[in-house]
Length: 286
Image 1: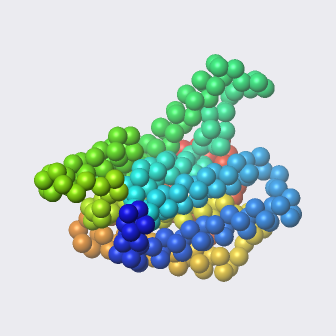
Image 2: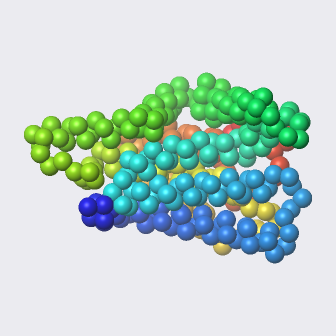
Image 3: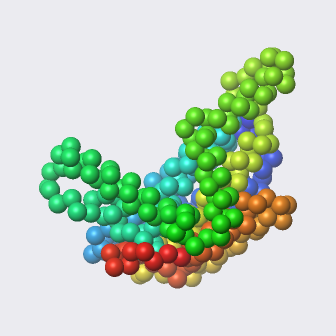
């Protein structure tokens, strides 16, 4: 049943799968190339470059896992997994824009002891949460400079994410509705095709993958500048923009909100390369 449900999903949303698979190939190609270059030429004398590359690797694995779930009959479980990817890419955006240093993003800033005790670990967690909250406010919250309408829609979108990730609310409600519609018959362990739930996954996957693509240039060392890479990046960026604008054209209000977010807070391109976020840059957004 999982195989059948996954096959139906892939065949029905063929265009989405082509774009997503192309993006994942490009994502993988980028990370492998950067790791190979550093392995051959030595890691740069930049304290947090390796940390940055591993953050991108974590994003790749989580994104890939979500897509594997969707193509095996579990798009909403993939949707839940993408909730964590969203946090990961927002954190990376904080580094790219200089909203916080890596030490601040991980909560290490100000912790000077060589061996961490329980108090140190608690302080690190508290520091990390404080920085994450500040970065969130500057990217999508009241300090972001985004229009009020965009902030409202992004908050609604985030609440939907949380509802499914923490309680499986949408999975539960749709399963309940399907049982009622069938008079209690046709119980299935695997979710049947559901256009509403499929759309929830497709839209969020497209949006988050587009955000990842926008910050991906930051994974590269400046010595690895490649015009062919930049050309591929541009094609994917235009393709994601086309997909999201298509939602705007049919009246989906989240689409203009997301476009505003990408065009103001994730306005990166292949001219960006890795550099250490400096403390004095804190607070710059966009």
